[in-house]
Every structure is written in C-alpha cells, then in structure tokens.
Length: 479
Ligand SMILES: [Zn+2]
Image (cartoon, rainbow, N blue to C red; front, side, top):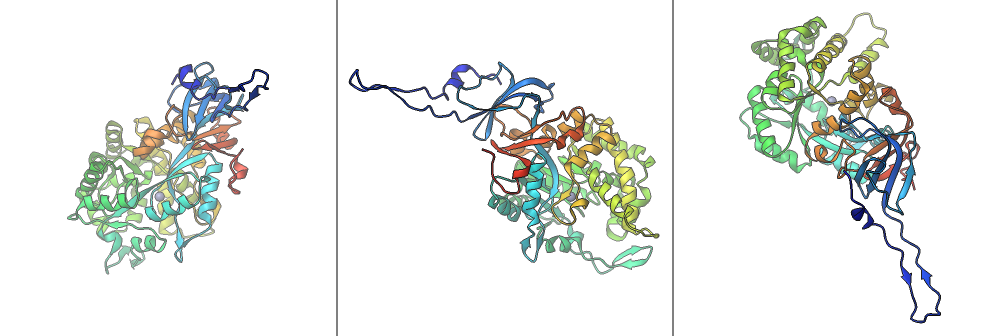
C-alpha cells in the first residue's frame, strides 16, 4: 500500500516560471493547478481487511479509486491535494446490503419510491446493493438513468422450476380444505420481475446466457428445483464465471444438497427446516403438501440442534458456502402480526412466528460452526417504510441477538459481503485498499464500540464523489 514519493510527485504540477526574453520584463507565475487527489486525514481508519483500526490515518483518493490508505507517513499527501480533515472520526468501507428488492412496477412504471429509496440507502452509508429478485435489464436501466446519487446496483436473475409457473388444478391441501392459489411466478411477473422457467431437461447454459445478456451478476435459484437442476445450473453458471445463490431449501433440493452441488450461498435461515424432512417427504411436500404449515410444525428452536441441520451447517463451513440469514425481514413480519388484533392466527402468521425463533437459533449455530455470513436484509423499496427491513437492522440483530462482535458484523457488510457477491465486487469493493473503488463512509462515532453508531454518518463517498446524507434527495454532490 505504500507509495513512493516519486510516484506521487508525478501528480504534482510544478509551478511554472515564465521568463520573457528581456531581462527587464516582469516574471509571471501561473496559478498552480490543484492536484486531483483527495486526502482524508486524521481519521481512525477501519479498512475492512481484518487489521486493527489505524489511528490518525491518511487515505488518498484519485478519480474513482483509492490510491493509498494507511498510517500517517505511509501515504504521502501531494502538495496541492484537496484535504479533508477527519480528525477523531471513523472511516470505514461503504456498506453493502447483499439482499434487496428494488424494482416493483405498477402499471408498467416504477413507483417514484425507487429513486427515493436508493437515495435513502446511500444516506445510510450503503454504497452497494445486490437485488435478489427483479428484472435485471430494467432495473439497471432505471438506476443508470438516476446518475451518481445511488448505490452500485448488482442484479441477480431469478430461476425456478415448473410448478412455480404452473401449479396445477388440484390446489393445495390445507386444514381449511383445498386452496387454489395463483402461481407465484404470476405475482412476480405482475410486478415486472422476470423469473426464468427451468425444467430438469432444459439447457442450463442458455439460461445463463439469457441472464448474462440481461446484465445479471449471477443466478438466484428460487423454488421448485431438484438436486439435478441445481447441479446443472451451478455448473453452467460457474463455466460462465457467474455465482449462484438460492433459498436455503430450494424445494425440493435442500440447503445441504445445494452446498454440496457447489452453490455459492444460501439465503433465509428458515429454509434449514428443509433438512428436517427426508428426500421423499420433500418431494411430496412440494407437489401436494402445504409447505408453510409443514415448516411451521417442524421449525422449533430445539429442532435446530438436530444432527441433520448441524451437518448441513458444518458442510457449508467446510466448503465455504455463504449464508445470509435475513433476520430483520422476519422481525418486521413478526412485528406486523403483533400489531394485528386477531385471535386466530393465520397459517402465514404461524409460519412467521416459527421461522423467527428457528432462524435466530440456526444463525447462532452457523456462526458457532464457522459458516461465512453475509449481511443481507431483504429490504424492499416498496410499501410502508416502517415495514421494510434494513441493513442497519440486520447488523443490530447480528450483534444483539446472535452475539457477533460489531467488528464481525461490519465485516459481514463490507469485505465478506463483497466476496459473497463475487465477480467484480469481490475484486473492487468491500475494503479500503489501493486499487479498490473509493466507496467510503465517514462516521462521527466509533462503530466498533456500538454498531448503532453506524447512524452517525457525516458523509458517504461513492466512486470518489462525496455526499452528505441531507443532500441525497437533492442530488447535489458536495463541493
Ligand atoms: Zn428476498
């Protein structure tokens, strides 16, 4: 990270002394051009690499990249750099929410909430998000049109099996008799999302080609996919250098099967309930059963210590499969039901309440067993604001309910989240190191002593451009 003075001095434009041909002519000094480097000096630097914070640090940014970050003396400040005094404050990498849903089309147009929500995320210090649903091409087109005052957006391509699109005419057996539901894919499509249907005999490479053409970062496996389908999709995506994530228990394939198939990550802690069913039971449940009620019945806190769940977690830790628990989304769902004055809980409510305690305990076991955690919130840019999960909420739960240190929680939203995204983000985001994108957050308070101090955002830098939280709605970059 250390830069020699000769490299830095190259950027300092020397003062020009212009002499006229006559010795009596006045000597003119041209005003020196400012150096394009931004030097953030005096901050406590927590760079996300895993090293201890560096007091009184110097961080140099030029263009959209970090060019040096370290202790005073490690990075030489060019003479005419723009200096930002950050004494006593905390400089951390821009935060990454690895699980959001931004695009919701109504009548063909996105609600204005999309841009407001992206500005709000930036104001919270979130400089990158990964959309786990969506229509990748449409979302990226709309985000690009917004300009710089939005986080970097990466989009995953949804893939699901046949019954997700055509759920037959038999309905689903429930305690209240047979229930006929609209296929989930139709609900998604009505909101403008573009799930791709995959049958076990289909060509997985062509699914990957469509996803790539749409600008997707990777595949998100959603539901109704068996083990053979998961294997084919993972192999095809990896051939193209794209990551594959999926719901834990992509129904019928279980989280363990997904991990063993080489899938890069699983989301939603409640999905580990799938490990508690035999392969035959999983197949039957998917086709004829009531998945939600079956999950609600088995997903107890005690069931987390079942050897089948522990085996799945141990395998994930061994292979390096990422796990994204999405605890804050479940907490919001529980809070929603708590606010209702109902005496008879719906199936949905029973499921949510079971998933909450079960998911917390699964996450605790995952952390104990060394599973790599990525902090994704399942935030949605749609609906009542107080019902939306948030990254800060997720990090708060990881510390207060799961027992992670604030440092470990921060890694799950910076370095490890970048690795979880894979591809370009893994190489360019998540840490403050020379060569990475200049995505930074300056806090007035120490987030390592209290994760809640992430709310003390002074400014957010994305690609070398600085924004103060209050400016983000107006879109005017700080001068
Ligand atoms: Zn989601």
